[in-house]
Image (tube, rainbow, N blue to C red):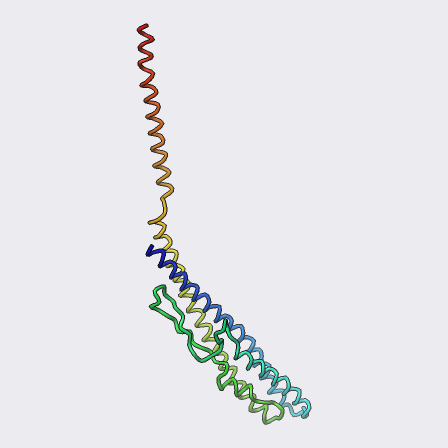
Length: 219
């Protein structure tokens, strides 16, 4: 019963880790799209500095830049089952069946100043575009660091989950050793006793036939 209870706790810890891994994978999926948006924004900052462009051209560049910035700001508010995906706060993930160990999943904050500064810029003038170029470059650098953090979180939790899978298998084997019948041994024992019963029956049949044989000889 203790083993069965421990197996249930291991299963619970595995579920916790699986959900946390899904959380990290969802984070990285959004961050990949943010990377595409920032890359295009970086391109727009350079295009807007083209001396052959007029104010109306830069206005169109700025329109697209602003739309992409709005998208990034919207991603920063996304959640996973009601839990914010992008916050500076770390999340504690249980990694052991007794609750004694936990992994601190480092947070990623898309609402940080590095990102909000870039998304708050414009590219409607050459000067503004030059400022935006520097800010977007910083945001891309920060994003690379944040995606590395998410990858580290996911890899660490995957290792912990694999360890729990091994523990679960070992506990199941130990539980089976205690609770389950050894089919091979019991089958052999059954065959042995079945043969003994058949042998005994044959001997009784022969013993019963001997007196009748003697009586026939005497008569």
